Image 1 (cartoon, rainbow over the protein chains, first blue to last red):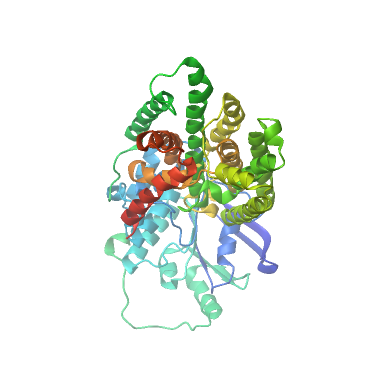
Image 2 (image 1 turned 60 degrees about the vertical axis):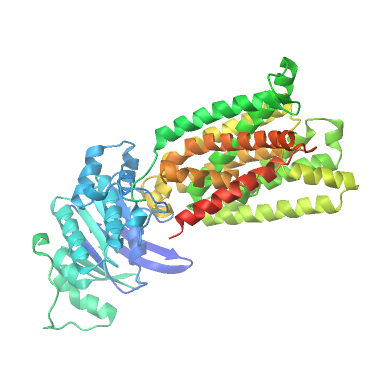
Length: 228
Length: 322
């Protein structure tokens, strides 16, 4: 459960979030959308307790920052095992499950600086999953991934939510939001424009981006059959 | 290079063996030649010198590994934080004003005082919630200040002999050190190492960045402050008794990464042992060189560590480069 009540935040004297109230419960997959500079990352950091005055909740809230990377050429297995730091143990089963869920079991001995960008991104997600968290807070988890890899990660997040977890993810790919998320929060200039199902939120998202909503008959890429 | 070679335990075993061999060789080697010395020389000259080489080297190696891990920067070196520079200013000050001539422990005590002041200034500059960049900037400012004070002491040196003496001391060395030096330097170095050795898991988390480490429950600001204080104790006390010895802290973690992997926490113990081994080996070479080549003067230890370390670093850099 994540709750923000009448929350405001400023960065360098500029108010970035105005009086935000938001609650995310178990089973919800919330897509956080909005133009660049809308305050999405700040809102996500606030939920993770990472803003000044906040308190991180390392055992229950796992956070993956935008463009997360590892400074050293550690093995993928070592990076994923860092997820156990909040519990102070080396729970092999949790690490194995996180590796298996992200399809990385066979790559555990590879150096994280010598695998593809998609594999490294999955390793960062596996690191968060290894904590066995209740909430996943992810900043652009599918940015710079190829379409199939993006679908695989989104399906994984949807399964995590369906199993009773909470997911809040900053996302720019609106078609992925409508397919996988259960709820969409549209943020513009520090205000919540819409907080509803992805379908109903779409016109608000379009307005925030300055785009139109319409029927598009162009051929589209569909997700791999097994990710459903 | 997809899989790791070596491993932590074999590397640690090798390092312990190397330390025992190098330590014994160091005890058996002196200006008079190679052999078992009489007990007086052993206890008054060889033991302090060997123990100081081990201790100072251990502090430098461990500090280098901790700083590179905490700052996520493979170029970080204990000298970067400016604390060894401050120790040098303190020691040179004690010499300059003549206290060292009146009272033998004044030189290392001055160095310790300089290191302590430098450490306090560093933590003060970096603020209540330091981040990696703020710590580096504070260290660079402190280094620049220490370097200018040293240059001032050199330009104002009362006579050419004092100038030569100060320059010599700044190049680092362990000759003619006594048990007094050992008793002065050992407690702060041991305390600093004890502080630093406990940071392993936090440094692992910091590999993912400061925000992610905080989300994993790691107190980032406190960790950086402990790292800075531990490095200041270990390196500052070392510089107070041994002068400026560069490069060990920078090169040791790079020497070890191919063998124990790049996880910062796994590097700490090996880096401590390898730093001790490297400095003992360099100090041994400093004594053996003149014996073998018939030189009158020992090469300075700080000169030797850089001479030995630089080629290693070039080889590693060539291997790492894509």
